[in-house]
Image (cartoon, rainbow, N blue to C red):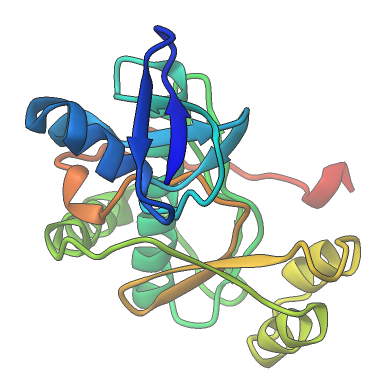
Length: 208
């Protein structure tokens, strides 16, 4: 058994391997329905990350900044998947959550994109979301991660991975999509009920 300390100081005794979502369910089903992210001992974790030691757990909903970050970051993955499907061969770079949403920088190569493409991207995003695909994290060796993106001819991700430490590299999978990612997602895509792409703009890779 492990002892999970909550923000109010109360302690939940749980089986080792229980997840943040299990803790939420042990409190109330209503809370579990609204929890979309969590942190354990100050580190961002998935809602289904097994907890194997005593520690401090914070559960986040969309009303928390951390919950919004997980929601928007997860939505950026869905947008990236939709764009990859609609514009085959594009190269993804980074897609973080920001204060009021998210963005994803993408090299469209021989493709062109305009605001007239936004409705079909949004429509595909919602189709993916309705699939209720789980976000799953997995560790990947540096060599395998580099090879994965070399096979995609994505020099941007290769550059990012070359600056990472072997043993600290993780991929996130959902549906048919895989992305280099440090984590922090909602439990599944079905939590995302609506999307709106606000703009398309040009960007320089790392300001170059």
